[in-house]
Image (cartoon, rainbow, N blue to C red; front, side, top):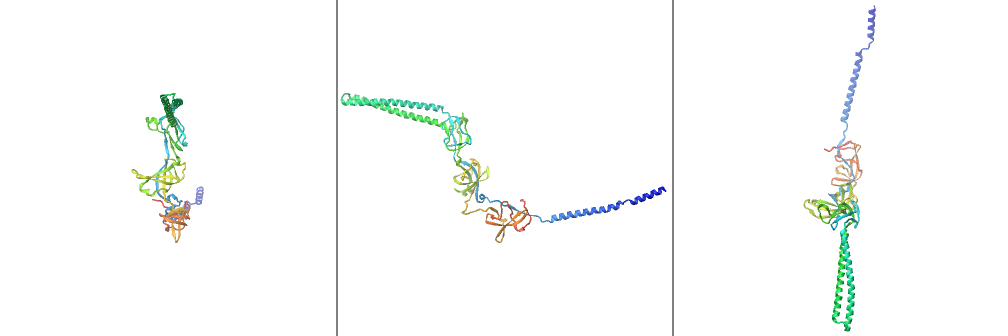
Length: 410
């Protein structure tokens, strides 16, 4: 009886259990449904991406302000800033330097003392010449006194001879004595003159030991120091200097360029130019042609052209590299448009002109006011601003609001 009761109870518990097979079947179906739905959504998204309107590739031109130099340039050349007036200051004598009073970059005035040389020997010679002048003056004074005495004696003898007291021979001796002292006085006066000229020579020699600036300018190089020898000619090998310093007249700065002889016909006197220093490439410097030097360089086949600055500036230094744009003369009343764009970027509808401006990746038709067309470019007076991006070609295939992308150059 007990075994039968346990068996019945086990059957009743088994009847109460949930069947796993019945539970797994709806779950599997839901998972398959979710997977199919995800696949369908992905396929729809891919199809939508594939069928979406793609941006049209176009060539883009960025509007920038017109440069008058570029519009009027007929020739470009390069050269250097040159100073027409510069000098290496030396001495007229060979001597030892005792003092140098300048440094590089110093402004000097005409006549300003730059250096002094040893003048000890020259001063001794000057003192000797001055002593010779003094001696000659004493001899002249003595001769003058003797001459006065001889003149008085000659007058007295002349009177006595007329009275018959003195003989004619006495008169002749008095006359000879007078003439002799007159000659000695003349010689003494000439000796004084010679001695004074000798003094002037030695004074000039002393002045030559003081080296002065020949003109107003700036010291660019200092070539000598105290204690060195200097000479107007090269002497003594490398131990003798031939110059104290180099002075440049900054007011004489100009430009020298070499122009190929094949293009020299484009250059004329008075022609306007725009120069740009390599050190300041964004700084336009106006000027004009001074002269075309009437000779050519046989080796380089070039002709030198001199150019003056309209206004000198302290930033322009001698020997700086510079580029020059030779300009054609502006026509009377000529006015450049603020912007120039390619002619193929301009659309025409009747008498109106327009461009496709790119805004937020889409094209927008924008009317413009144009000037005359020249060399494949059109001047735009109204309708555009600097930095605007416009389509440069293929205008007919675009529509208002169409998305575009910049075509990459191959």
